[in-house]
Length: 308
Image 1: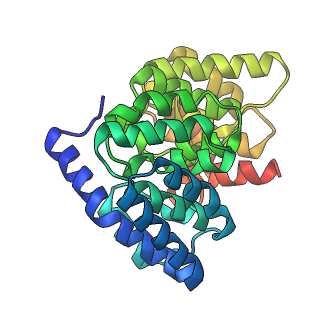
Image 2: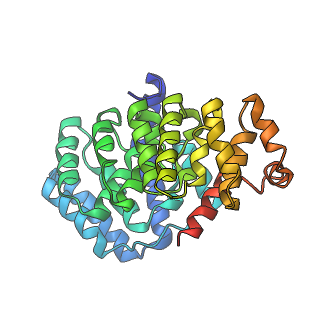
Image 3: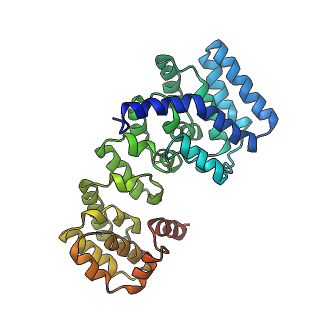
């Protein structure tokens, strides 16, 4: 169920249908040539007039011939416009082809049954890059409550490109996923070693069950002689207790400085009384946290770089 109120959901739907196509077109015009833009507008007019699913499907597929997979070049002004249109929308992580395909999606007739007949068929037949566009567009599609089963099912993939489109830089999961499905998605992101700092609104969705899952996962990794991604401890920090504190003691005894940064930040952000005592032994890490040179984002970025 959506976390929006009915009024907010109505406002969001109106925003999508009225403002997003024009905004996406301004982005396309900055990076696509005039012939590609003309092709896109021609296809939109044809399937809007005819109501032809076939025409829509062909345009969605053939867009790859006319638009590149280059990332969108988003100015600060455009980023702010995107945020005003829909909180959490981050087109800087989209490519030009995704944007063109989303433009097509938002122009298909939005009578509910008609729209879902077409969209469900797209989901069933889409290739990897088409799935990427479909899932990344979830927060600006109509009928978002009804798309929840599709989004949850999409998280079962082991293809990082598709999983990332749902889980990373996307406000849809934090808005709509029930706790159990949210926890499964976050755990899968940990298992797949995806950058957790790019999961939107994760602090507000942290919960005791997820902290337990994260701790159990860490124990399994340690038992297998493997390391634990340092961002994991962000999930545990608000729920620190005697058992989790033992985990962080182990982390802080590591010879890996990045692991210790993650442990230190989890301790620093915790209200568990013994946490500050343990952290006091690491003044350099405290200074890094207080000077903002150690953040969950910087830890996640450094961890991803070590894996390249």
